[in-house]
Length: 163
Image (cartoon, rainbow, N blue to C red; front, side, top):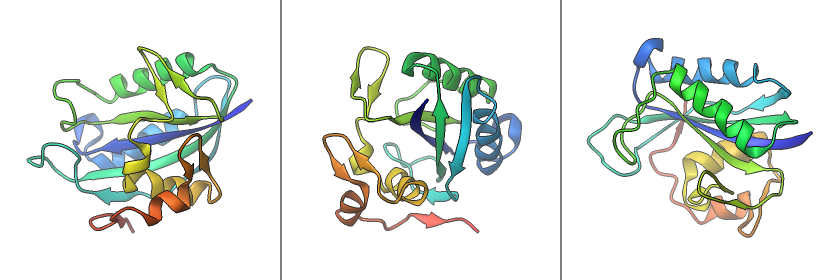
């Protein structure tokens, strides 16, 4: 079994009525992936969009899983969950019903045409790092360092934990 961290984001309602409901439904679906067990999930956070600003704010979270799947098999499961939530890939950094990213896959470094782990922008995104620190306070990102140190260097304005 390997420990993995999944970043979740949504800013469109889709079939589940709201971004918050999309995230809740996705967390439930992540817990149902074969050969995978849910360990914990962060609080939900609201953040401003990256990229085009003419879209709604995002709801974000991080989930910690334990899996026997390899990284590509897990990626395929995540993409199936995104598709089940009406994900359309129309615009880079555009609005979406659901975005699921493998942030960390154990301590592995993966860089191929389908997957980059650690996630390429992980060190620049408080909406990923803050919930990651919540589920794994002593988390270290390969080749980047301790999550807490990375967070201390970022502007967290606009990031709000949801009630």
